[in-house]
Amino acid sequence: MPVSLDIPLSQLLGGLMTFVRVSGIFAFVPIPGVTAARSAAKIVMALALTLALSNRWPQTLPASWSGLAAAMIGEAALGITIGLVVALATEFLLVAFQTLSLQAGYSFASTIDPTTQADAGVLQVFAQLTSGLLFFSLGLHHQVVLAFVRSLEIHPAGQFWLKPAAIPEIIGLGSLVFSTGLRLALPVIAFLMVVDLSLALMGRINAHLQLILLAFPAKMVATLALLSLLTLVIPVVYRQFAEAALLVVRKVIAI
Image (cartoon, rainbow, N blue to C red; front, side, top):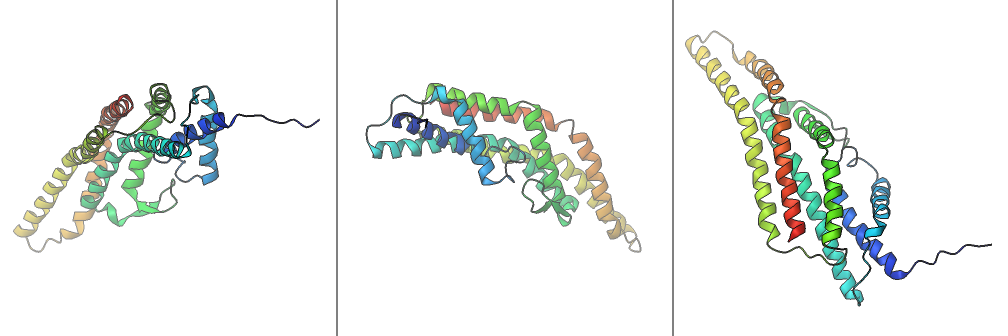
């Protein structure tokens, strides 16, 4: 005997709006492996999370199709905003290591990025892998899911609009990315400048010394030594920046 599934149209549309919000988050949240995953796998992950939150689907929907389309845009804006803010929590490491790779000479060395399968600098890949490790070890994936569930409680699907008051918070977090990355890299950059000045002065005193050949090896070894010390500081800075990013997410949801 054939079995028919009679699902109300309103329930399907409510699930669709929730799926749009989830998809916006998955588009930007820096989960290791998701960037290189196929589109079908990302869709399945977003769909599974949407079905798991079926009890949070909205019960009331806009009366017109134009209102439904506007609600879809609002859902996409909220999902993309949450995903973008969480993604900014890892960008300061990329800024710091990109600056270091240019000063230490590691910009000439490239490897395969395991997340995108493209050529990338050695230190950039190291920064991405470190941020992915800290993302899970500090429990940020739980915080993202909790923030998403909280957004469904405060603003059910179809009832959220991104207000202009949230824009300065996001811009401020973006400026914090550059300031934090530069502050993290400045001690190493200052030491490398001292190495350059020392070699230049020694070469000025004795022109027969070919110290230019020692510049790159000395700076690369010094960078590795200082990075080993920075590994003690990076988790603390990452936690502080992640807390600031989650605070911005809460402000965006509560607006």
